[in-house]
Each structure stands twice: as structure tokens, then as C-alpha cells.
Amino acid sequence: MFTKLFILFTTVSLLEIFVLVKVGNFLGAWPTVSLVVVTALIGSALVRSQGLQLLQQLQQRIAKGEMPGQQLIEGIMLITTGVLLVTPGFVTDLCGLLLLQPAIRGAIAKTILANVKFSPATMSSGFSPSHSGFSKNNIDNDVIEGEFERKDDNK
Image (cartoon, rainbow, N blue to C red; front, side, top):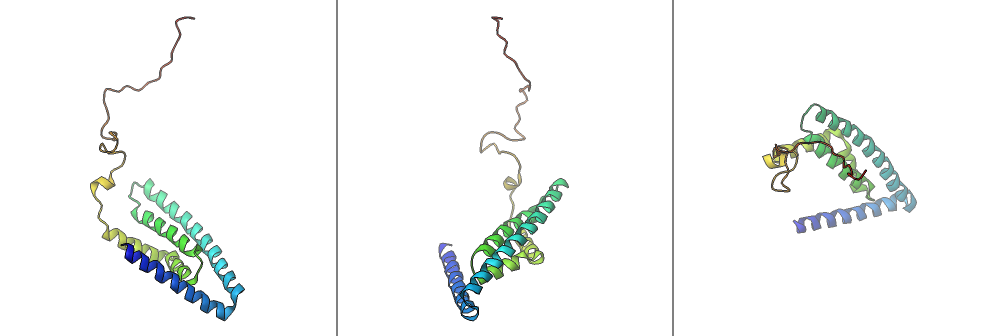
């Protein structure tokens, strides 16, 4: 896994440098830097607006009592998109702009959901007995809730 990540990051970095040099030779240094900054600013604004829309969809799914799996995956993808758009370079900006498209992001999220297996342990809510001894299903029936007040006998 480490080798694959190393190759990926090295390839993307070298490709970014190559593209930046080519664009810099064509446009000049300052216009290239300005273009990278502008794409980062515009991308950040778009990620923010789409993140707010996604948050509303997530809240609607939760209110209906549905599992918001796709919205959660798309949220992680939006975070990745933000990182890609803020990273200086045109290749990462292109990848980020592709992930900003709701149709592309939705298709990738559906593919991920279709290929991920969920076990009952990962789908449960609350604490499991193996972690801390507390669970929604492990309630002690001898507990009586109430309030108390300590009164001094010396008064």
C-alpha cells in the first residue's frame, strides 16, 4: 500500500511541476501564480456552497429516519475536493473540479456504497458492551432516576 501511495504522490507531483512549468512558459510567472490562486479561491467557494447543500440533504435523510450513507461519502469526497482545489497546481484543480460535479460525485459514491460491506456491528448505534459496558440495550432496570438535596441537621 505504501508503495502505491508513494508512486501516486510522486507521479502527481511531477505532473504538477511539468504542467506549471509549461503554463508558466506560455503565460508568464505572475499570471500563472494568479491563476492558481484564483482557482483555489473559486474552488473553495464552490466547495463551501455544495457542502451546505449536502448538509441539508443529510439532515433531511436523518429526519426521515433513513441512513445517509451516500451523503456521508459525498461529504468525504467534498473534503477531498477542497484539498485538491487548494493544493497549488492545475492537475489537482482539474481533479477537484471534476469531483465538484454532483453527477460524477454521486456516481462514485454509489459505486463505493455498492462495493462496501457493512456488518451489523458497524451499523449499531450507541456504545457496544465490548467497548465500555454501556449500550442502549444494556440498561439496568434497578436504577431509579431522581434528584436529591443534602440538608444539614445542625440548622
